[in-house]
Image (cartoon, rainbow, N blue to C red; front, side, top):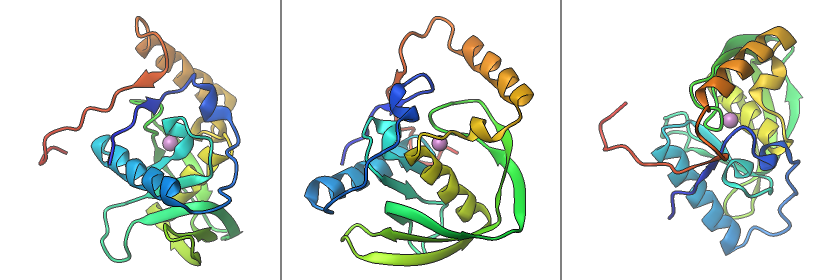
Length: 182
Ligand code: NI
């Protein structure tokens, strides 16, 4: 497994709509493994292929529970959203140090393929539902910033630009931290 470089805000890949996976083959399975490896090294709870420069509809979510196991989302599709929503703070590995309150459906039902290419359906709620909605947004070129008011987005973008001063480009090497760190 490989820790891949992250694409940060400014990368055109983050605004690209990813293409569906035609066949879940070894290359796709390797991509899933690398997404998990990169997400864990970066201490994230989810990662979409766009964020490592691959515009294919593949994402992973791991909110830290072993049962059920972490989610592999290949060609995911949200089939229903609860009318009930929840607003909570979100961040993104592609926009480090920037956080905003995002309103999301509390519960979603989704369809996707797993790492073996088998279709499945899952009902998620709370934080896991939030993470899945965030990752599926990535596959459509949508970032959490897009869900904020124009004023809030403007403030966060100004903060982001300031934090990126003197750091050219939009690729970030992920350096895994020693085990035990939060
Ligand atoms: Ni993200």
